[in-house]
Image (tube, rainbow, N blue to C red; front, side):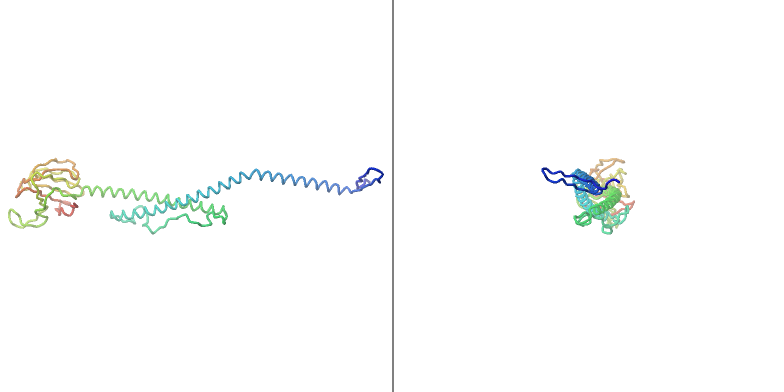
Length: 309
């Protein structure tokens, strides 16, 4: 039967006695196994250390990139919040403009009156949005979700505002056209010798309706168009003498009578302040003056209702 022990012979120098050391084989095998296990463990630790050491620059770069992205998102959230504030101011301005042009500020393309709906602002110092004491990943995701919601709302609001401004521009263009066609300036320089309304006729001394204004001025003084329009009538009348009628649209017409000279012809487009004739005394009159009338839908109205200067 093979021996279960290993004998180690120690031969010293000189006359010393030779010694024998017997060691069980199990111990030797155990030492070898422990040595191999220790070597493998050391190799694994060294391998992990080298791997981590190689990964450190990349991890540091990722951390820097993550920090930079958080700063950029925080900065962007501040800009979105500022845009939200400007959108709110734009809504308020839109409401005021609509009130000025007699539009209902609550109607239009579905936009609420300012103050009934608040914007989702993103900003401040909420620690849950990436603070040093909060879980980084959770705060980052929360901030991104809020950013997406705010940007979606901004896109919706901008679309609504675009429709609102288009509607407002159409209205303003129409209002501009109406203002341009309203006879809002004096057609001649002078003074009013007879106003609109009932008076005693200078010819019959009887009460009659004077359907316009008599503006006294020197003979040959310029007569201008008080608004844009198209010349609808150029004739000589036994009573009014040389007469011009301008159609301004929107049911408005203006008439100029007792003229000396006429500088326009029927069908001609005229602009406000354009000279159309000269003051005269043609027709039945007691002296040089301009007889000026304004008709709305065929009914004579007081021209002073429209004159602004």
